[in-house]
Amino acid sequence: MTKLRTERLTRAFLGLVAVNDVSFSMEEGEILGIIGPNGAGKTTFINLVSGIIMPSSGKVEYKGRDISYMPAHERARLGIARTYQLIHPLENLSLIENVMVGSIFAKGNGLKTARAKAEEVCASLGLTGLDRDTSKLTILEIKKMEIARALANEPEVLFLDEVMAGLNSDETRELIAQVQAIARERKLAVGVVEHVMGVIKELTHRVIVLEAGELIAEGPYEEVSKNPRVIEAYLGGAA
Amino acid sequence: MNRNLARVVATLLGALAVVLPALAGAYPLQVARNVMLYMALAITWDMLLRSGQISFGIAGLFGLGAYASILGVIRAGMPAWASIPFAAAFSALAALLIGYLILRLRGMYFSIVTLALAEIFRIVIHNLHDFTGGPEGIVAPAGVIFGGSASGLYWLALVGLAVALGASIWFEKSKFHFALTAIRDNEIAASSSGVDIFRWLLATFVITSGIQGLLGGIFVQSYGFATPDSVFSADFTLLPLAMALLGGIHGTVGPIMGAVLLGVASEWLKLQMPYGHLVVYGIIIIIVILFMPRGLYGLARKMARPAEGRAE
Image (cartoon, rainbow over all chains, first blue to last red):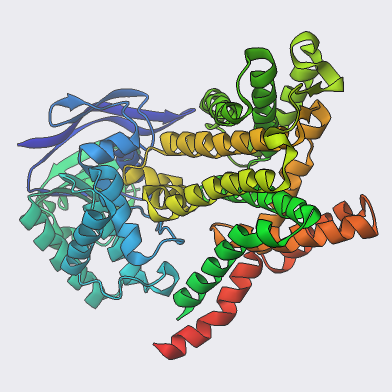
């Protein structure tokens, strides 16, 4: 079942077209890689589908419903959640309270229910010491907390924007396994932006490749990584 | 341990507030009334501040409530007691309309617009001479509420404080705590977690402004008259702000501490050097912002924290 699709989605900032005419779809249970060189428009693309910015033209559909101009908080309630490339901890709330926010506002749960649900999500990511201040957390714990906060929305579509960046290889392996388990259990459609190709290869079923805002290739990682246009985009044009 | 101590202090303060009229004369009661009024205003200012929005509009909504109350009595024939909740409703309604327009602004832009509110209302009331009494003000023919009884006025002020306190504690224990803190920390993260930022800010602005209007009503009925220059005085913005900053922001306890300290100190200073107390306020604001941005309560908690660590 198609959870999310875009149709000719475009966003221009003054003259710069950051996302240009991108059409794609995400299916239930699918982990989709979103790759491309720096400045290709990956984060802008996630900002568009999660409602942080609005499109210049084109369409975003969630389960068949047009949500192109719906504000972010309403999309969060519908079932679209995300994390951020630059971490966004709520530093005046504790770890567990950060996670509760998603449950309280995206699901409309009372504080007690929200706490129970947040504890569950934290457990699935192996987070402990839940009443700590965010200033006391390691970078891995902050990344997990942000994933937990997104999961507390009880989303059907989840975007992870470079969550593995800054983690060592053991931590990366741990997080990959957890993300896979959670996606399977919750039948999530997950969109993953990563620069480390090993992560993309291991984690995703399929990738889309953006370059200068355009979608230039689509398919399983093994296939796409041999595509000459993709190689050129990453390595630069052959002189 | 620490929580028990706080409970004991709160109970003692509450008991003191209740028995004070039986023990104290008219002058200490009037000082207490003043302290309670500013304390309540400081609390409401802090409630909105918990979302990161710095309002300079306290005097505006306070003064609006004051005029709604006294005009309700004089022009609409309301009983004095009924004009006080009416003042709250009037300021809340005004805040709903104003908030709808200005709560899309952030930071300095929001603050500056709120700073203009008191001035706008003051000028409007100046100019609606026939209805409002104009610059000379307006006097309630029936005089002060409760016939000016010192203990009656004290109880009325205590009710005003109780409303502000109750609302603030409710904010700390409810979804407001999560919504406002998330908005203050990171609006983008908040909206991604489903927080309707505008709606929560509007609700907070309406509730705090309503309480400020209520306090304006209590204030004006305690004197039996209003002039634009007295009820829209910048004092009603600056003193609560200084109290909350001194005591500590983002919670109920700080503004209470600040109001007791500054309120009592200013009574004393007023006797020593009339008008000079404002200089002291200014100096306090500067020192607090520079050296203890979390106020006295924040400082106390910081000093208490190592002890807590050992206990665990």
